[in-house]
Length: 262
Image (cartoon, rainbow, N blue to C red; front, top):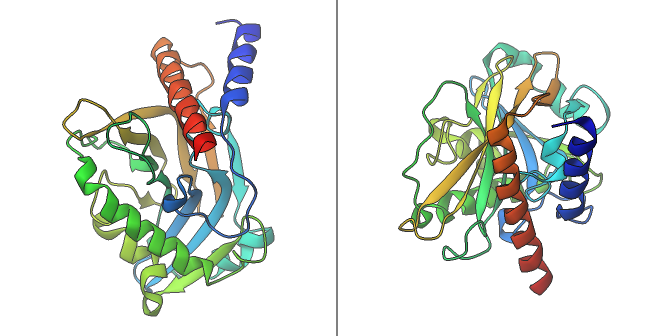
């Protein structure tokens, strides 16, 4: 595909993306459009940090403008710095993951509910996830986000951060990422600092016995020990990526129509 055509594709995706209004507090999956958050966990010292990455679930859906370009975040600076520096004591023991979700919709409407997550490289992604299993880990995700909204600077700045300890219960990221999954649900969603992770979106699929289906992004996340988080999109998409793009446009369009009617 030539450069001009690529630009038209990106422009079309941007026009159809659904962006939530700016909001200081972390948005939950119960809103239908949660914040995209980075969780960093020091299991040895029982401490975690939560970072609002400034995107929403719909911003980062397959084919949306936010997921179609590369980004980086410096956790050593600005509103993130205090939370990141609080974890340096156990830097060699840190694991991390990125997550956003939509828990509003119907299992009978394709793409109306789902989640976006990092996935550990090399694993076989589960294909047997059921919508009947979906609500419990998403409710726990919301408890985790609401717990962190009471900590740090989420309530006062855009794209803030917070630190939680074991004593903080649901706000501690290690309680949510049990078994290195989303409360024991889905794929392995965290990995060590310095290790690149893939990205996948699971969403409701009609006619699949109440199952979730998924598409894998042609992009990766990586968190370095120096506090630099990068999201890197492949420079030259393969032909099958454009098929996923078209599928993503359909999902984003459906989400837009649903939220306009809400």
